[in-house]
Image (cartoon, rainbow, N blue to C red):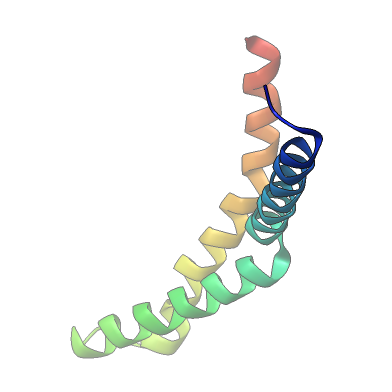
Length: 86
């Protein structure tokens, strides 16, 4: 049988894990993450377009970065819709 001290340690470990999970979830849904990914997407696409010799890489790379942001805005809507169907 577990002692009170062991149970207290186990509860503390669960609390620490919950804090990590909450921080991870906050990061996953944060605007900071979305902006960072958008900027990185833009940079990668600019480099690709530049080396591929495509015209106006700095302008044309805006489209994929914008598409990412748009997709993050629509995902919660579709998630809620899907959950209602279940």
